[in-house]
Image (cartoon, rainbow, N blue to C red; front, side, top):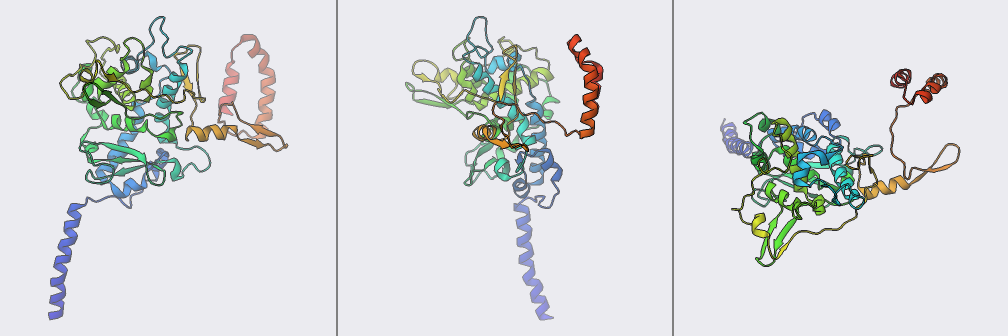
Length: 408
């Protein structure tokens, strides 16, 4: 009896210790089945977040990733939006702007970033090895007291880890924000309040532009301006800075904004709320524009003036997976899903056909088509022989042709 009593007495401190650990460390869904999530977002490595993040935070990452893809929905003519006018500056009459022969490559680079941010989280690397960790971005939850989140107020730290793999470290400050939908369904604000409309999705979109796996030919980052005369340095952060930086040369676009993650994020958020809240914003009228706050240290007005130095970053301005339409403001980019250098090497690789011919896909666009049985091909060929004369005469695809291809 005495020995049993002693055992029970010894168990009490152990149970108390376990209880305190449960209170200190929130439970995570280590055994949760996330196969549907992994399938829906193949460009993201979720298992680390499953281990590290409390359930509530993990759910926030899933939902905000889903809505970020709506926030960044593809637009082939971004220059026609108020967000572009405010944070990139649209071409004026007679101006050598984004759609000019000189700067069209810069425009295509920006369009590529916008396209790939919207596609990569869903698709990841297409083809063999598409689920390898090397081609995914890991989501992680980190304490603000250690690791990549030492700065107070830091929301996400996106970087390559010691193994050269991309990861997004979500700091505690990130989870103090709101869902995009919750802001949208709340009290409507004017465009003057744009700077206060920072959502989970806005922050995510900002950091996804950093990731080289997207296939950009240049690197997007957070930029810094300074004034040597006043010994001031300031990160280009916030709506006032992004707007000021874009319009630094007045009506002539500041093409260096293509490197600024902040400008992409505000472009998307501006256009979202312009549509949802019917701002009727043209990106120019001061009546609708964000107010320039001059009271905070390192504000644009404080840095501007004699001695001011804005970032100047010159990298390559090619983007071979993109091309413009008849209207140079309209552009199209093929999906890449891997670093741009790897994509260039892959498209130059030759392969041998069954007949022994060495082929290459250099310069060709990737077209993915469903496999068609040989019997169906023969039937299709017979139908085409009877339909092609009509197609050639009319110059249009007859309904029979459309139905045949859609049903094959």
